[in-house]
Amino acid sequence: MKKMIAFVFAIAVVLGLSAPLLAHHGAAAFENDPAKRLTLKGTVVEWFWANPHCFLQFDVKADDGKNVRWVVETSNPPDMVNRGWSKGSLKPGDQVTVMIRPVKSGKPVGSVISVTLPTGQVLSAGGEAPAPAAAGRGAAAAGQGDYPAR
Image 1 (spheres, rainbow, N blue to C red):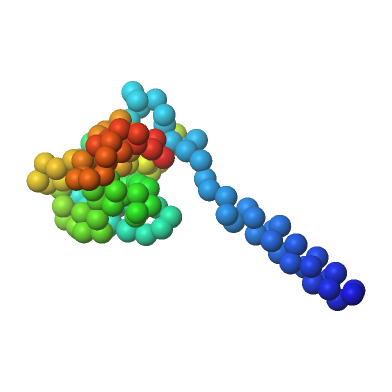
Image 2 (image 1 turned 180 degrees about the vertical axis):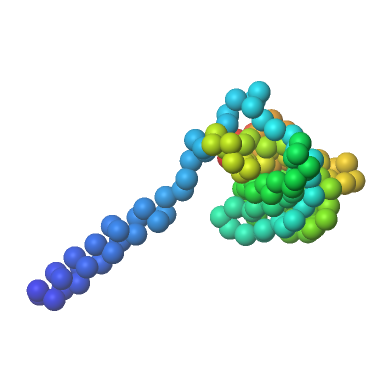
């Protein structure tokens, strides 16, 4: 009986200590004021298609002529597929225009609102930029009822 109690206690401790690992971060680090959003033109370095978030690395030429590497996040791959994105949406070397919510710290990090591709196609990652319409998907696919940007 003592072994059973010790085993149950050990399981409870492990589960209790692992609970914070399941927590998800909030969006408090990002600017929520629409006036502080940035629109940046740059060159794609890498597009990471992975859970729990996809990430875009791109270089932007600063006023002093030096490249600044920006790292911005989107939602998870299934959500991005529903918005019209794919693993092949962005390729190294693509010239893109990225609208972001930057972090409050001023570092070159942010959350994507939309990306305009070299073809002129606009991919929405959430917020007020419209999501692409998909046949047979209803109002949510037409940008109505979108989840808020992270």
